Length: 393
Image 1: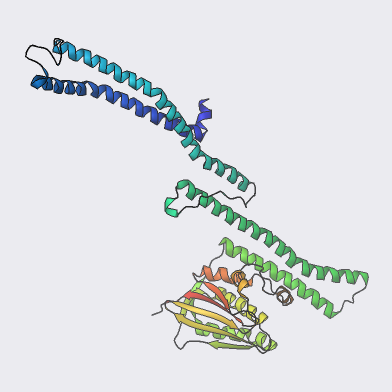
Image 2: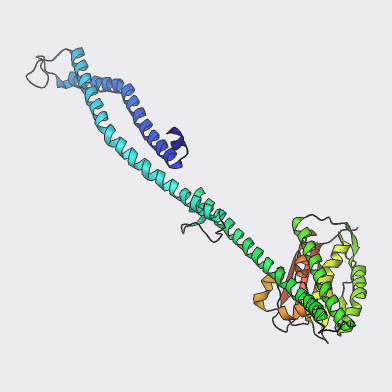
């Protein structure tokens, strides 16, 4: 029985309130018993003084025709009667007071336990995978919210985050399956064609199979790279990097790709020397991902430009293109894995769909920030990120 009560928060609250009410009444009774004699004597003495100053006649009678009784006996009798009256009144008040304390204890206990019971039910459902469950929250300003309401808000935030993670997990599985299916279908179809004698094993067919296998390898490598970045199981080799030389070398590396597509590749560098402390290989990986993305969505005759600019204690590096642009509704999701503004074109051009996600993780690992701006369809896009400026003085 004791174990049952100790395991129920309702009964803990109930007995706490009830004990508090009973203790209050007991203390009140004890205080009355202690103070009553002194208070009674004080009032009797004041009454006797009043009588002696004008309330008692010369013939020994007190305000009437009864002879005055002995002072001590009168005081004792009056105290006994008064004491009995007080005790009777206290006993009569004890039962209704106890009933009121009982009712108030039940109501207050239910008030505090009900939201906890709701939390128990909702958290059990969340633990079972029902991440859309939410706790009801009263519409009140923050300053009037108690600890339980703050806890409800935090549980709802946790459930929302779990729901987002679950949605991302499902989407990731679907995206990976979709990404793998296309090249595997091409490879399998070619193999079946060879077996059935439908396809001729010439160089063009083998080249197509090789491209699909290369796409699979690139996807697996990118997934592994992203996994390392998100788990934090990689180390950065920070070195001093001269951005003017770094960007110049990068242009030479990418020059052939841009020339083959007929896209201009230009630089906009400041006159002053700008130096950052970064992992040069990872920084190159960031830029290559951004440049590949810009080249993929910029048509022949367009332009891609690298802009380097000093902004306070930071260096801002931008990759700006005159390509197809990004509409407003797509901007918040550009850095999500497997998210594509133009699915058909991206897959046709061989993009894995997670290059920008990797770039974002690498920039954040350098204590920087990355974002994208675009005026909309056919207005081009500008991917920018910041790095802390290195003081080489």
